Length: 272
Image 1 (spheres, rainbow, N blue to C red):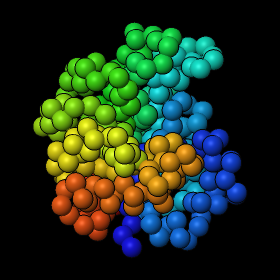
Image 2 (cartoon, rainbow, N blue to C red; image 1 turned 90 degrees about the horizontal axis):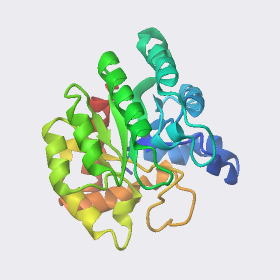
Image 3 (tube, one colour; image 1 turned 135 degrees about the vertical axis):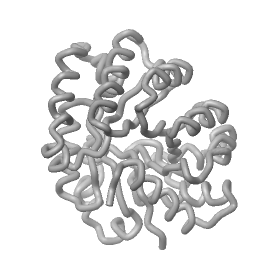
């Protein structure tokens, strides 16, 4: 069975406590490790980013991304919005130290971006965090994991301001046209469980249009479990269901998808 690289997961999430043994039982299971060749454990605030780092240190195939998600920046669902200057300076100091960064297995800044779905919505605050983290990524040479929910135009315009930025639009839900423009600029496009959903015809059309050399796989676990696991706690060992759909869309084998997307992940995140 081919092994896959999951480029977007949240193994610190409390949903994993509902599973027997929690995330640790999954991550140390030999059958799980036989399916998963690598994982990017992505933080959404400074606190869980530190947990993501601790977990990455515990598993040889796991790496960490650290950053501030737009919802966390706003203090959603109940909390106080963060101060951009103070918070971003902490993040900058953390990732600017290359020795510490390597010791912490930090390979990306994320999850960052814009989310225009949830109310109340503070667009200026979200943009301040998004642009601030893109600046940091350019300063230190790390790729970014971008969250784009119902904010396609603003996300695209924002990354155009930072031509040195690189990374992946995760859980992609934009148009094929926007994907083409991003790929021209060196960006990668990632798809997860949504491509397996019965009514996700448009997502599959876009996924089929993305060249294999700019395609990545993800689960966004514990969310977005693919068919036939809808409603369950998602995890990385479910990724073959996503890969099978991708293989059909591109007219290749799951083994091809495994090899190509793993090579893409290693290239983007500068992994051995």
